[in-house]
Image 1 (cartoon, rainbow, N blue to C red):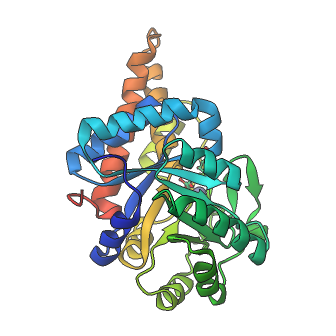
Image 2 (image 1 turned 90 degrees about the vertical axis):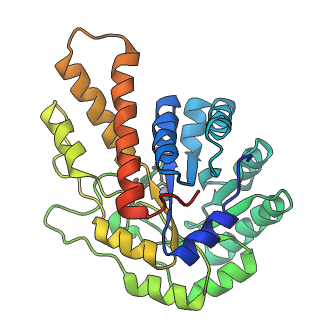
Length: 311
Ligand code: G3H
Ligand code: 13P
Ligand code: ZN
């Protein structure tokens, strides 16, 4: 099958009480590591590209690697723009073969957010591309924009019906206490998510797919490997896995993971170079990084997302 949009994936995920993993990709080893895991577990997947990943690796390289992954496996794969910052960027990605885009107007006023989201939806829907919008602001760093914890804001459930109806989006990212990056809570702070907001949104939008950004669990084994081999990630804290599983059983159909991949790849490469100080062939250490990516994705599919055998 060619690359797919997210419509069918989300419908099945909602009905089945599981979530699809949306993994950020920046280079070939990351794409291959993710796809290897999805192939072994027969899982659908969303490969997402941020604006800065697109600048780093270039649109055509990413597009062709991801279509190659689809050709090789035949899995349902959606190619998604993560945190689209403008109509023009979304349009470029749609014109260049992406099957899904996010327009992130969460920093705008409610009316401006609806206006730009609706414009993207009109362009996307006429080309069979699905659109994710966002209401509420997460803390953390994304695409070079940093939002301090005190400036982050939870989604107001009272706004969601109007936003979805007027904009026409296919899925909605909401802020319930997750955040981007590897330092999601302060040391000693108890991780908490606002499941009351998710529950209220779910009741107001029955059957509608919700998206969770900033959802890495910051897996301790990779953090400790990094620290063991010269890194400094001591205070990294993520979202507890039981909370992610609970969200996946509710209306959350898409769980975004980037930081866990970064940590795993860095751990694999640091360990390889520390144990093999004479190695200088990038294929040797990148292969270990790719293995770690694959292991993380397999672990997520089986223990957090629940999407094995759903391809
Ligand atoms: O939400 C942001 C993603 O982790 C992508 O980050 O803009 O550094 O590629 P990036
Ligand atoms: P993490 O930083 O928790 O992996 O979140 C990634 C994300 O939301 C990408 O949009
Ligand atoms: Zn995000």
